[in-house]
Image: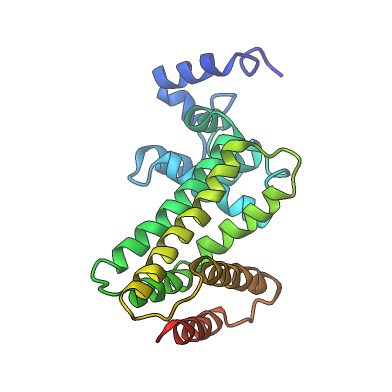
Length: 232
């Protein structure tokens, strides 16, 4: 290890901030790949590219085996740029999880802008799992892989839990509103939420084991059964 790589992270990030060229060059001064240059100078943004590629790697392998070097090699960025934006692999992992959760709910909010009934809210939340199936499947897989490691941290646990908390809140409210309005029969909202959430998780993992599994048809059949069960 050279004297440069032994510098504290604060020193490294300060150097990158004041000398952006160093973030795009390798240890010997050579230019990194065109992907890195496009990421730093293009509209996508380096941090966004790093999050996307890291999510793919974590899903393909697992949290404990993916290294900063793996992410750097896959993106063409110098590893120092990863430390500059995120500080650590743990922070990058957490940001990838948070961004995937935020994107799912942004998509949900966009398609429910004109929703007028509790039934529509439930239906569209289930539909999100078809439209956003690939990123949500990656989120489910990396969450499971992470849960099996011995390096769990409260921050990452909270980031993963946030998805399920938000899901439970929006589905629970829709079910309670439907019961109040006489659209749904009296049920235990929490039990119905757990059923929906568990089925959706199961479809994500079943497709990993059986790629030919028709997840869209299965999810829509589940929606038909749930709404039929809820209706008065």
